[in-house]
Image 1 (cartoon, rainbow, N blue to C red):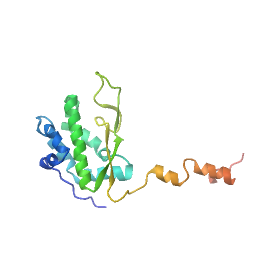
Image 2 (image 1 turned 60 degrees about the horizontal axis):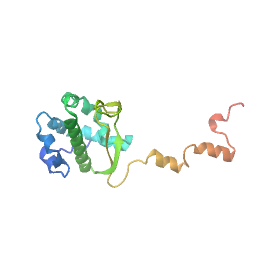
Image 3 (image 1 turned 135 degrees about the horizontal axis):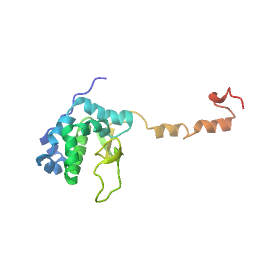
Image 4 (image 1 turned 90 degrees about the vertical axis):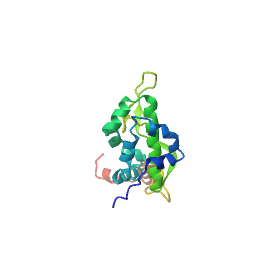
Length: 187
């Protein structure tokens, strides 16, 4: 399947958004790599991976690109060295940017968040990064669904159609049959 052209977001388009305009400080603060973030996300292949994260992996779109994003040298340095407030504000602005891209590609937010990482215990001396999970700096990200339907049903929905967990064992017990794998075994 060919990759769709990218949805390119410019600074002025970001600031025209109802949430984007609340991050003018992030765009205008010297040393904050927002232009590098825009450049990163304005690529067709990355945007396709964001959609694929929702479609094929049942993960937030940011999960499709977060490791590559965090490995960008300028962004990695920023997250390592910026104070907690600046780091948080950039991560929130990235969430808005992801929403703009996904909406332009035909997706809407679900109002739910998906996990990207696990933080250690919180406190004044706690780390600002994760200790486990997919991402080092992002804890969670917005989930989306495609306008006009879902590509694949969730495992939970499909399992319910089968009668729940362990449905084949219940059938064996009530129908008196043995599963094919056990048919040739001696007691």
